[in-house]
Each structure stands twice: as structure tokens, then as C-alpha cells.
Image 1 (tube, rainbow, N blue to C red):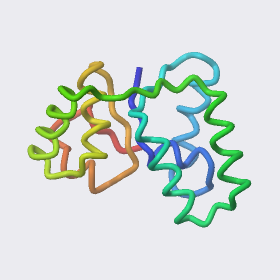
Image 2: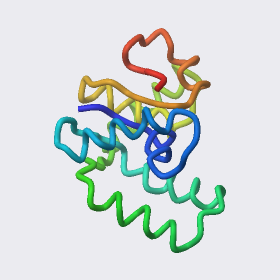
Image 3: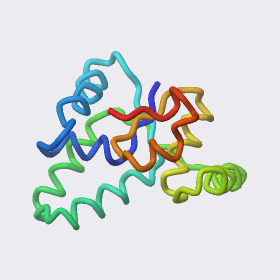
Image 4: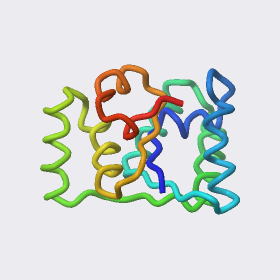
Length: 133
């Protein structure tokens, strides 16, 4: 299992730097060689990115329909988990959103993959837990 954040999954739908690397995870998910977990927050983040990147309503709908067909594991934190996420926020001085992905990777003892260079810099001492594509 691996945790991917919005910055990686967004690259499945656009052609930009490192989209080819991000799509490797998509292909592995489709062929069943990898499991991908994300906080359910991913859906809200993607919706926001689609809006601000000027995706048409039709294209947004198409992207979400595609994601629905994948077997992404969308998970919700408990109230207790939210307290742990809050600790991660304080430790790394990052957003609660970003900390949610790190929490999930820590909870399931798996790698966290992001294309967010600022996040990688803030969490670089985690080693394999925060990898830049």
C-alpha cells in the first residue's frame, strides 16, 4: 500500500512535469499490483484544484467518474486520529490537509508520495515517508 496526495493524483489528468511518474502509480493500481490509500479529503482537494485550474464542469465530472472506477481506498480519520493529525501539524508546521496524508501513511506503515516540494522539504527527515516523484 502507498498513500498518494492530491498533487500526485491530479497529474493523472494533466500533462505537466512528472505526470509520467504519477501515472505509473495509476497503472499499478489498475493492474492490481499496488493499493492506494488516501484520506477522503482527496475528493475535496481535487474538486478545488479542478475549479482553479479551470476544468470544465464536464471534464470535472469525467475525472471523478474515472476515479470512481479505480479501487482507491478513501479513508476517514476518527476524532482520535484528528488529534494525531494535529500533532503532525505542529511537528512539521504544515496544513491539517497535508498532515492527513502523513497520518495515513504512518497509520498503515507505508510510503507517502507527493509532488509538493515544499512539503517534502518540511518533512525530509522522515526519509522514505515523504518521497518526491
